[in-house]
Length: 302
Image 1 (cartoon, one colour):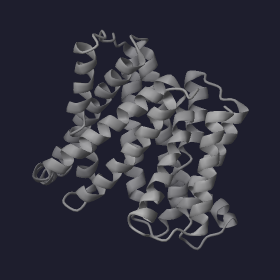
Image 2 (cartoon, helix red, strand yellow):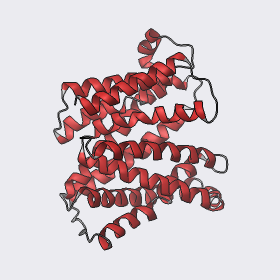
Image 3 (cartoon, helix red, strand yellow):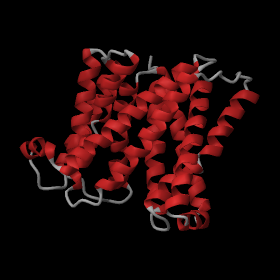
């Protein structure tokens, strides 16, 4: 029988793909900072709504946050913002594909952070599945550029590679931090723990980013205001997807959840092939096959 975290993760990956598509639309009317803020600022009310519905609906009691919880929230919130900015910064380089490939090492790095900070040890089968899926995603990332495997390995000291690795590091750290925050609550159940953690994180990130925009680019607030309708959609889809991530990572190790989440790339290429009639090359097909094998290995042989 498939465990609950699996369908939750798959649904979250689909929602993340939908949110990313909507955020690209926002980039046409506002800057990178505004598009990033929309995810957190417009998602915060929905995160708080999830907590209210769980509290006043099924009657789940509110958790009692402690210092450990708030510490993980701060670490996770800042790490996720930093990771997002680093990833966006990669696109200013001509050879950003290599850096993007290295940023996809997030699940592997999450496994290391999970061991260091939460004492979580993954099995050999799980580690192999994570490796297969990471290689698949890295292959897709460089499928449309003239680069060979040797060049990919020897470019480790290139600026784009270092930025990509650092982005993956921050993403992996944020995933482990969110799991640590949710587990620090100790109850009442994984859904309320996830919703409460999400609301605390998005509130912190909203305040942090709002302060940054006010100090650095106040005009961005007007651009955000004029695009409030699509921003609201981004916020809702983003909050719903994040709730799924947090719930899955409360049930399972962050590295395992993030490895399964690589299936998002398959959703992306399915959309490209069937809806936009874009041609997919053999390296992208090979990458999708590796991701599929990695996902199956995670589910069947962990």
